[in-house]
Each structure stands twice: as C-alpha cells, then as structure tokens.
Image (cartoon, rainbow, N blue to C red; front, side):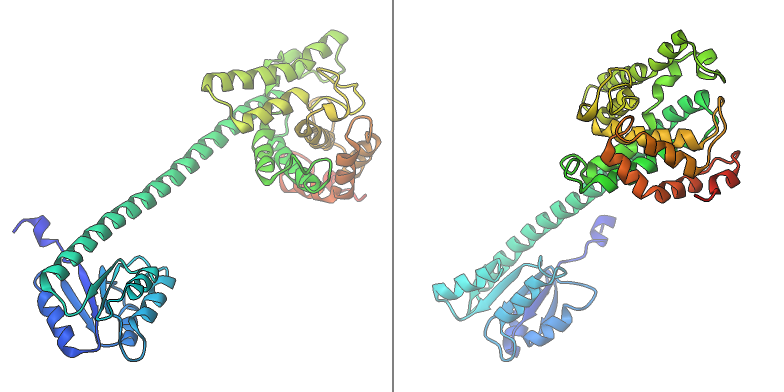
Amino acid sequence: MSAEQSQYSPPVILVVDDIPDNLMLMTDLLKDLYRVKAANSGEKALRVLQGDTLPDLILLDVMMPGLSGHEVAAQLKRDPRTRDIPIIFLTAMTATEDEILGLELGAVDYIAKPIRPPLLLARVSTQLKIKAAADFLRDQNEYLEQEVQRRTREVTAIQDVTIQAMASLAETRDNETGNHIRRTQHYIKVLAGLMQDHPRFSHFLSDEIIQVLFKSAPLHDIGKIGIPDHILLKPGRFTEEEFEIMKSHTTLGRDAIQQAEDRLGMRVDFLSLAKEIAYSHQEKWDGSGYPQGLAGDDIPISARLMAVADVYDALICRRVYKPGMPHAQAVEIIRQGRGTHFDPDICDAFLANNEQFHAIAERFVDSDQDLASKRVAQ
C-alpha cells in the first residue's frame, strides 16, 4: 500500500432511522466503502452532530417519533456548522408534494423505501463526489480570499512606507520637526471627521476619502525637494525672487506625483488627492494665495483642510527662521485668518475643537522641542 493510500480516510456517513433493522441494513450496505455512524432518533442524531467530527453525508429517515427528519433537517440548515452537509431523505412517503417539501428543506436527494441497494450506493457516491468538489472550491475560495487580503496588506504596507520615506526626505531638507508628517496626518483626519456631517462637505468626506486624506497628507510638501538649500533653509526673509522660487514647490510637488502616477499607468485615489493637496494647500480663501490664486470653493476641499493643519503646525513648531509659539497664540492667529486665509466653516471646526489638535501636537512632539512651551495655558 502506498503512503497516499495509507493516509486515505473514507468518508463518514451518518444514518438516522428509528427502526433497528433499517439501521443494520444500511450499515451492512455501506460499511465496506465508508465509515458509518448510526442514530436511532432525530434527537440522538443532533447529539452526534455536536461532536468534533462531522459526517460527509446524512441518510435521514423522515417518519420518526419525536423529531421528524424534516425537523432535524431544518435545524441542521440553520446551523452554519452543519448547513453544508448533504442530506438524503429516506422515506416510504412518495407523493410529489412530500419530495418537494424535502428538497425545499435543503435535501439533495430523496430515496423511497424499500431501499434498493444499487440505487442507494449510486446516489450516495454521486452526492459525496459533489460534496468533495464543493469542499475543494470552498477551500480554494477561502485560500484565495486570505491570499488577496495578505497581498493587499503587503501592498498597502509598501505603499505607506514609500510615502513616509518620500515625505521624510522632503522634511529633512525643510525643517527640524521630524514628527511634522505624523502630526499633519492626524490633524487632517480629525478635521475631516469634524466636517463629515456638514452640509457643505458631506458629499465628499466619506470614511474612505478621510482614510485617503490621511494617507495623502505626508506628500503635501514633497515639492520642497526641488527648492535650493540657500532658499529653503534661509533663516531670514525671502527676497521677491527667492519667494517666487519657494512658491514653485507646489507645482514641483504636483508634477512629481503626476509623474509617479503616469509611470504606474493607472489612476490611484490617494495620489489624486495628494496632487490636490501638494498643488493647492497654499491657496487662501480670499484668493491671495498661490500658485493659481484660487478663492472660496474653487479651492479643493482637501487643500482647504490641509491649509489649516499645515499652518497650525508651522506656527507651533520651531523652524530655521523662527521659534515655535504657544498653542493659544497659534489658535488666535488661525482665528484671525478666518474668511481670509481659511474656509470659515473649517476654521470654526478647528477653533471649537482646538484642544484635539493640541493633544495631537503633544502626542507627536519633536524630541528636540521644549515641551513646556507647548503646555502654556490659554
């Protein structure tokens, strides 16, 4: 006998009948081909099915005292653990309506008594083959679903690491606030959540979009990689020419993300929002921002959210050209920008919930910053 043959385990068949002679007949017919379990009542059959090993097929008598075969079948089909076990009804009831009832209860076949051995064996064999095929497909589907989930998690993780690496590269050239990326991610997520039920924003801010915004936020300043160090790191005020070069980081960022998307050869949701944020987060509500001088609702919602998040973090954090300021002072500056720099409704949400942003700033505080300055009382 080969190793494969020695490992083969015959299918298990549960025979349920209240007449001992019928149970003996069935067992004798099946025992050479299958492992047979027997139950002489519906109640006992249900107890057998509570065990660890489930049968591959059930031969179920219909007319029994206590629980009938129909009642047993109904219970088995309601239980996720047993609903896929094929049931063949055995009965002397041969009327068409009886067969229809059995099939409606989920039986796969209906064999009339008295039993004809060749017919029984043929139908049992057919149903076991069908079940084996169904089990194989179910296992394959579960495996494929798990594999898709695993690959999706893997791709998402690679995607997130790549975004963080790109954003961190821009940050190392821009300022000394190593956690700026994480803070702005959480600011924009909280701010978007606050606006989610607002009539001006509910059509856009679905849960999925908020998650994409969270993922996109780190790329808002990616274009600063293209700004020369003598401008990017200048501690004093920019000249007019230097400021024009500095403003180009919005276009450089959008174009860099667009090139990445073009090379990928497909549209990616988080990259589309990342382009909006990178290109338009310096626009102002009154039209005095850049690069396009957009005003009001012409500014993408994603960029309006980032404008508040980015300015707040810039105010409270130390940069090469300035010290960080206390939270209360930063909130007051945001307040002064309501309706000029910032969308009034987004600004109001920030002002009403500013302590949430303060908490995020303290949670992701930069190690080289003075914690005391971030805890100044309002």
